Amino acid sequence: MNEIIKNGIERSMSYMAYRSLMKQLVEENSNTGLEKNESLAEYTKLNDRRMNRWDKTLKIADDSKAKLSHFNDNITWLVITESWCGDAAHIVPVLYKIAELININFRVVLRDKNLELMDQFLTNGARAIPKLIMIDNVTGNVLNTFGPRPNEATKMVVDYKKKHGAITPEFKEELQVWYNKNKGQSIIDDITEILCKMEPSICQQN
Image 1 (spheres, one colour):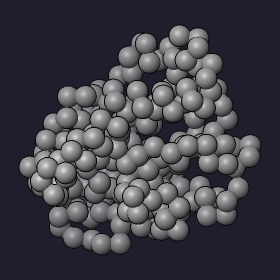
Image 2 (cartoon, helix red, strand yellow):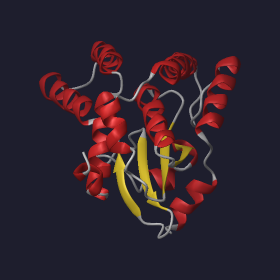
Image 3 (cartoon, rainbow, N blue to C red):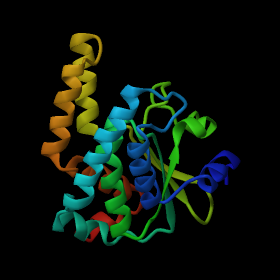
Image 4 (cartoon, rainbow, N blue to C red):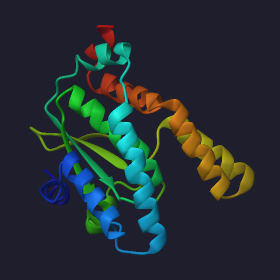
């Protein structure tokens, strides 16, 4: 296994430990990452509420469950994130719910404490999060990645930047509305597609 990835896994935490950390940060009016400020602390509070909602309400549809239930590879999902990341607040709970469904080892690692790891998985040269790394537990090979956004949200961002030049606070609000309406389905669909490519029998049985 790549030594940097191995170190990342060793420094990682469970999803429940990450959620506990988020709640602790809320109490302390703080945030993860190298930069600490009131704005990032406020985003952390907002994201904790978002994640609470998804943890309680997120459902995986029966047709997706049926397809995913055939997946049985021995892999680890390592997610790079930070408490203040708005996209992560919507995406990470969905990834965890999928991993829980199919008994995947799910680990969370903080970006700014693991920049060497992050720099192996840049998106268009940027340290964009959340980033999911799928690792074969037997060989240590990276099988695939996902993130920082589902395909549909990525297209929204690209189209908006093309038209307006940059993401605005107004667009960020639009994106949050989209996540709430979509209820994680685009993430589930994208992950299912990735797993189908890794193990074609998943799709063939449905």
